[in-house]
Image (cartoon, rainbow, N blue to C red):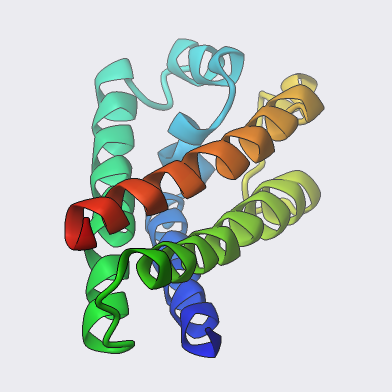
Length: 159
């Protein structure tokens, strides 16, 4: 199980790199992660187009889903030598939860909520960028969707 924690940290690094790449030229590049009013404001300000927001969201989703659906199971099978549903489910769940906790606590709460790295000038009145209700919804979805994904992938692989 220790390996699953390390592999979860690998997923965290992938998530972090996607975020860093998105905001490499400023936080507007990651505006697809923000609430809708912030997205609307930055498009009104001419900082980005809706088409660019959709493209960035699609790119991010593809990379992150590839990490969750392809990389995590490959690590589980080829590094951990897992070959049974229960072991696969537990190991994937550990990886996903490590990444989910990192995303909710470090990225959403600390990095976006308490640093200036994600601050978009002209949108300060719309802060916090991740509202408490949204953050709680994300936690609930993490607790529901990650176990479901772990179960589905384990069933498909070892069914």
